[in-house]
Length: 69
Image 1 (cartoon, rainbow, N blue to C red):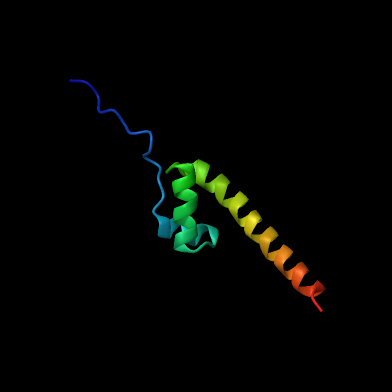
Image 2: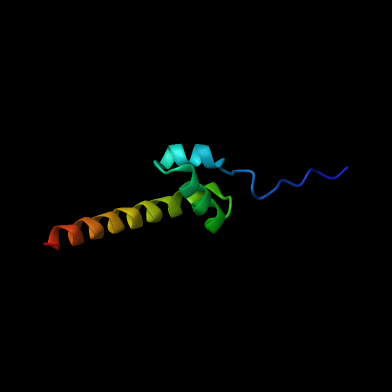
């Protein structure tokens, strides 16, 4: 009898688990997972980039708001 073939996606995230781990909303977690596939390794790397982009956007908005008269 042949061995059971393991799925390459055995290490996947639930969106709520992923959101809690990375400080994201569930919707943001779903976006990262959908964009990067279910691989935990890829999603963990993508979460760091996603959070950096959020910080950049927030900083840009705050900087622009300070310039307004």
